[in-house]
Image (cartoon, rainbow, N blue to C red):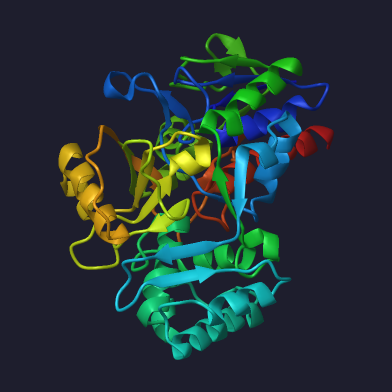
Length: 437
C-alpha cells in the first residue's frame, strides 16, 4: 500500500512514522516548504541575527503530552535531553495589587495542586479556596460541562475573580487555547485542566525546549521515515488530489491531508463527497501568535526560565518572556510570546520590541541595557479560534481512502502539538485498521 501524507508538520510526521512502521506500507511525505516542522520549526535569519537559527514560535509542552513524548522517544529524539522539565511555576512580579507566584511542589497528586494553590503568593485565602472548589467541581463532573460556554462565563459562574482569575485561569486559557477567555470554549479548557492540573503530578510539569524545534521531532522523524523505506519531498506543493489519488503524477492507495484547515478546505472542496467538510473548515476563524526575539548582552538573565509580564493590566501588551540563555544556552536571548488578538498587533516591529523591552524592565524593576538586535515573527493564522461548540471534522472523511490529520481534527483538545500528534497517530491507525478489515 502506498500512502501519501500531504503536509510535513507534526501531524503529518506523526502519521508518517506510525504508518512507516508497518512493513507493507510505503509512505511519501509532501511538504510545500523547504523544511519540515510546520508551525513548530526553526528558521535561519540573515542580518543582525548573524545566521542564528530561531524557532518560529516559543512552544511550551507539558508532562501530560504523552503521545508527543512517546513519538519523540520512538524516533530517537530523547525528551530528557531535548526538553527541560520544571515544576509548574507561574510568576508575575508586576502583578496587581501584589506580585503573583504559584509553584506546584513535587508531591503526589492531588496534594501538589492543593499545596500549590494554598501557598500561592499574591492571592487572598478566599480566592485560593475558591480555586480549589472550582477544580473540585470540574473533577466531580468528570470535566464534562452540561453545555459549552465561554471560559469567561464559566469563571463568572463559579466566582473565579481577583488575582487567581487574572494570573492563573486567564493566562492558562490563553496559553493553551490561544483564544481569549471571553471567546474560548469552556469545555476544551476543562479538558485541558483535566489532563494537566487534574492529572498526576508529572502531568503538570513544564517541558521547555532546550534545543531548537527542529531537533524535537522533524530531524529525527525524517531519518526514521527514510530508514523505514519512506520518502520526504520538500518544496513540493500539492494543489489538487484527483479522484484516483494521483499526486505529482503518481498514484497512491491512501492519502492523509495533514495541512491547516484553510488549506485542507481547498483540497476537499474539489470532491463532492468531502465538500461539506470543506465548507465546515472554510468557516473557521483564526488566532495569531507573535514571537519577539530580543538579543541583549550575555549577562542579561531572567530570574526564572519563564516569566509572566503585565498583559492583564490596562495598556500592557507583553504576556510571557522566556530566557533562552537558561533554556538553550544562548545567553542574552529573550523570547517574548504574544497569544491571540490584542493591542500588540497594532504596533510595528520596532515599536513592539521597544514596548516589550520597557515592560520587561518594569517587571524586573531594573535598568536593562539596550538591545543589540530584535526579530519579530508574526503568525497571523497560527491556530484556529477555539470557540464554544465549534464543530470539528473526523479523521476519516466520506471519500474512501482520504483521511485528515491536524490539531483541528483532535476534537477534545485545542491547537497544540499534542493534538497534532494525536491526530496524526489516529489517522494512521485508522488506515491500518481499515486495511485489515
